[in-house]
Image (cartoon, rainbow, N blue to C red):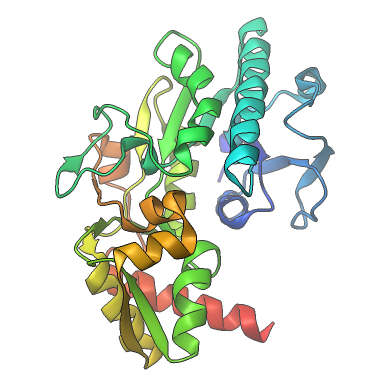
Length: 307
């Protein structure tokens, strides 16, 4: 990469599951990276800037303004009331960020990461970026942080929104709900198993997010896409097959009683995610099918347990 092609990217949430993969992708491409650092350690070569999105003074960045900001940081809550508070805090933080961008003569490209839960349960309908929003589960509260960005999208400010589906890899939901149980001999199907799951491996997700930040058209929404959608039942079968485990079914009513409405909706909603954007449709995913993505995720989980 020529020196002139190198970009300065500022990452929020760089120590998280997706953020770590985004930083690795940017480093592989030779870009310069700085990151908001609340408490966690950052990879070598990344400049950490102390702060918290709830009160960060964005003017600090003006002495070395980045070319793009990749926003992966989410203020999270553990229960219904704390998620409600987190959503309000996220909205306030996004408003402050947008106000700062509006004050700049040449603002950086902001890429805000959301999720496809904002579309709700759509059965077997293929859903692209034009679909109306119907947030369910955790996104009922967390979408509040997205609204200020949606409000200026397409209005001249260089902001884009990326919406990943189920992100599969060596951490997050896959390890908690599927891998760990499978290692004990059983992989659970939640409900009927007929709901569609759109999957993307975390490395492909990170690569697409970076592509939007570096080559995307500001003002657009990008659904992140990986593997063709499969039913949850098929996903469970493939995972169990790889782990040498058996499958079991947790009926919907027992699932709701065990985890509550929010988790029930998140585990059973059905969505076939597609994209209208050539940048996404033509992206060369490393794991273009569910089997290869699951195989890679299992190997990564096993490596995490050994480390």
